Image 1 (cartoon, helix red, strand yellow):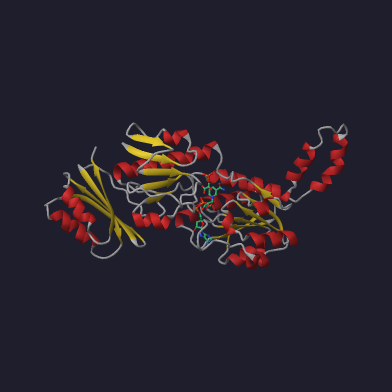
Image 2 (tube, helix red, strand yellow):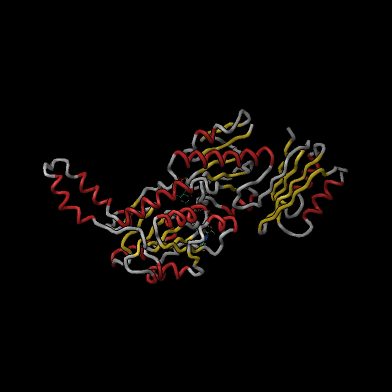
Length: 388
Ligand SMILES: NC(=O)C1=CN([C@@H]2O[C@H](COP(=O)(O)OP(=O)(O)OC[C@H]3O[C@@H](n4cnc5c(N)ncnc54)[C@H](O)[C@@H]3O)[C@@H](O)[C@H]2O)C=CC1
Ligand SMILES: O=C(O)C(=O)COP(=O)(O)O
């Protein structure tokens, strides 16, 4: 029986993907795998049996990836599974930033006892007049699953769209409209755009990227949308820019107590991915990644291990997570040859310092030989699988 521990609400359709071979619960102990959304996993105790963590969503800054990699725990996310939901909310945010719908609604809701509402609102409405999105410039920082969709949709709103992403994948580039202007320097986004929207992960490189220096380069009255992560913004610098009017509006899915009450902030309580469609997509993808890994050792959509997928048609499989250094493969295959084991299929993939080797055999290898592989210097983890 495989044991799955749940953190957060994972959509039932994902949980139902686990068949009778799985025991799934929130208070599982000695779990083989974790399914999580935004819960902070930095302080968890890693039980030695834990093999994988699947983030039903995109951002993995709630998971201690370095520790997981050191321990040979595969971390997955679900790329693109919630991007449409975020894109739609970004446009709601962008419209709220350019038309004062938010305060207009607030005022209208306070008028329940006003007999003259029809007349009064025609006088009042000038307070909430705004601008159109058409012809305004939009800078998209990070052109991945979400950024691409936001950029492409903005073109349909007749916006002048600029994209910045020095690490964009070729696959992603195919999906981005050629009418999106490619900016090679982030400073050009800052200088040229009326709206700036962030769609980058939060990591050591991006933390606090929107600081005083960046804000000073921006147009007066810029509108900033942050549906990515709160830590991308330097809070004090943003408050100063909001007070001075440099930033006319900050729309954030990650409000902090200091920012939430500011009159020029539109705070949203992390609703970007909160649609039933995206919760279902993420849960199903996370469950499938976990199942394929626990049952076959296949790795797809990992953020810390190489992609490794091999059909499993043999009696026995050995999967080894090891350092990406010379002679590892020779040492593993030499160990197997001491018992005259024939390797039917082999796959070796690497990602930065880490490598993953899958070996299919025509019969079960002995515990002794598996233990010998475990003892090879540079091996982090060895897992075996029986053919079905
Ligand atoms: N508000 C919400 O509910 C949600 C928030 N998110 C956040 O949005 C982020 C982006 O999500 P996706 O588009 O799905 O991820 P993604 O991985 O498809 O795209 C991220 C893009 O950012 C680019 N990038 C990385 N560092 C960069 C840098 N320093 N400058 C410019 N570009 C950089 C990457 O090359 C990649 O193309 C996630 O990491 C997460 O933090 C994602 C989903 C839901
Ligand atoms: O996918 C992401 O990165 C998100 O921020 C969505 O978070 P959630 O799954 O709604 O807690």
